[in-house]
Length: 296
DNA sequence: CCCCAGGGCCATA
DNA sequence: TATGGCCATGGG
Image (cartoon, rainbow, N blue to C red; front, side, top):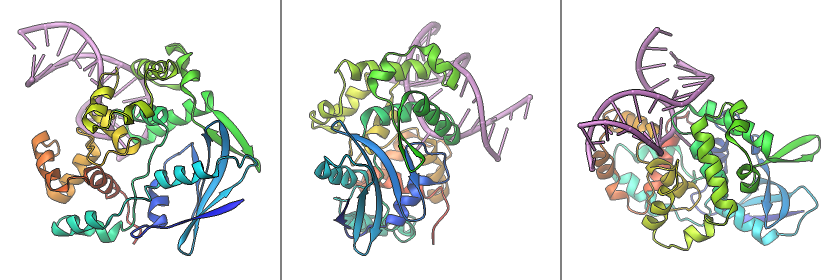
């Protein structure tokens, strides 16, 4: 079963696929040269699907029999690849800065790749705190393999991220063998319990309307600081002005591109971002992208 | 052996 | 409110 979504202007599936993979040990989807395949739980339906491209369209192919939520799946993919955003105003702003104009050409059509599931976004950003990304991906894989669910298809296992209910029932001792630190285990279990109890949800956060209120609400939670809250703001809540303050990758990119200090002041960062109102998350994403090899 | 990695908590002053 | 110790492990 197969259906199409029209590609927006300024969209490069190839760039998006590169960012999805980046040679890391990703556990939640499989990326090859032309497609990404993953399983998700959509309103209680287990959906295994592939996204590829053909002509002016993105092609979504449903690979399992549960084809119940086609409209929801279209919306999911559109949000995952941020298809609804018109990047033209962003590119015009980038072109005004001689140091940044190259981002438009080199990474043209790259979208913010979302993490649609709030629990996954929170766990991922907590796991990734203050360790190298390679190790963070290994920790995520262990968490997913131990406590997530698996969908077999053509002898390939497709993994789904654990549910809050599953993690909420664990003790720190059960995460220690995965080499997740005691502190991070406490944070993740705590978040799981909040979500399992219905005290935290994506829907409720989005209902706050004001981005500042959403970030403030997240920061109240133990284990979630400025960096984590804004990372989740970018990747899950789709807040256009979220900047993960304190991010070393951001510092590194700005050191390379702008010659900033290796640990610049927060005020320096804010002044740099100031002209990019509504595009601060996108600029962060492109600066992160600049840390990897170029496809052209 | 050193320092750093897509940070945040907590005690202290 | 600002600062420093600490967490824990892999990579360079």
